[in-house]
Image (cartoon, rainbow, N blue to C red; front, top):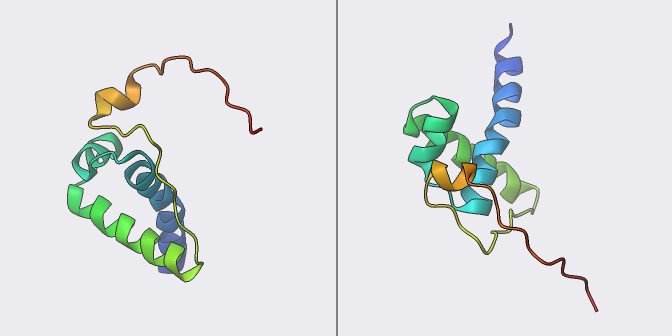
Length: 86
């Protein structure tokens, strides 16, 4: 397997931790536990993805409901009323 392939694969896989962190505010330590890697690895992947998003002039918008732990991630969400634009 070439190094280029590994880098591209991690960029794709690095998107999920970046989304969990930026969109849901899940702490990096919790994300590391979820992916079974060290927090330093998650930190680097998030930083790499952030640079790519900046280069593409794209941002991940945060959700109003933020997660504090993995248990929040696994907790079933409460049904909400659908909001329709007027």
